[in-house]
Length: 293
Image (cartoon, rainbow, N blue to C red; front, side, top):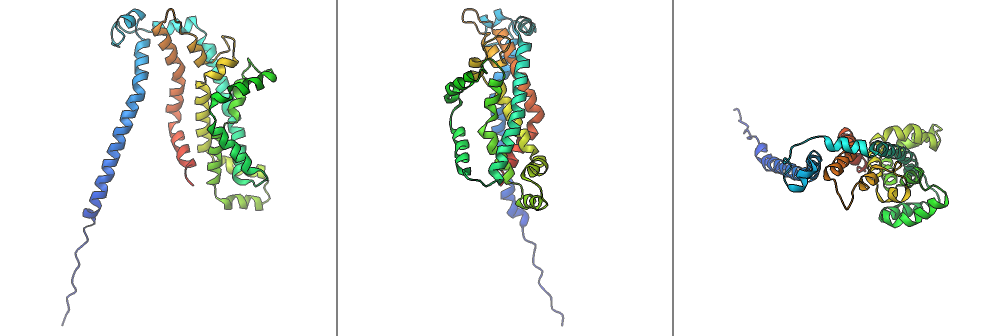
């Protein structure tokens, strides 16, 4: 006598997974809508400045709300470039930002490495001081820094703009967070092989922290390029000014040339847009990697 074994029907896994799949699609669409709205909010001022810079000053005064009134031309860009030292401002901002990036990467990575791996007396106090640096606004440090750099006779030089950005608490915490994500067994293996802490830092940790390096470099470059208050107080010569300070000097209360001011502004933030578009993948990867524990 043969016995028939009952065949169990397959479980409706597709029906069970359907609500989760639909919920994920709805969430992705909601995120896409939110990102599009935020992108439009950020793009509208840029497009408005670009359209205003291409219009004649007379049409801007007569009809400021219409971006197509009066036609478009590149006269404002040629006028701003020929009558203002924008090239010198570009060079000054580039030199200051690049040197600030180099020194910040060097000293910030060493400080983050020390806080992540080394154990020494007073380490908690150092961490507290770095955290206090994150809480203090930069405006509160203007007067002490001004007195300090005046005593060192550094006012009017680029070093007065480069050195304050070297001790950036944010860069120290980014490197510390990334170094903590490196497996401890890798560090211990290098130490057992006889490597010094300096060799561990240079040959083991630094090649692995490229995302953190790119993130800190881009954020430092943008912060240094956009700095306004401190360069305004430190640099007193017109040709030694940076892009933000130089653009602010173009605004005259008696006669504002809207097209020239907007053209200079567009020329000022075009490098930042180029840096972000080229290195946006490194920014996202660095921020995501440093946040993983």
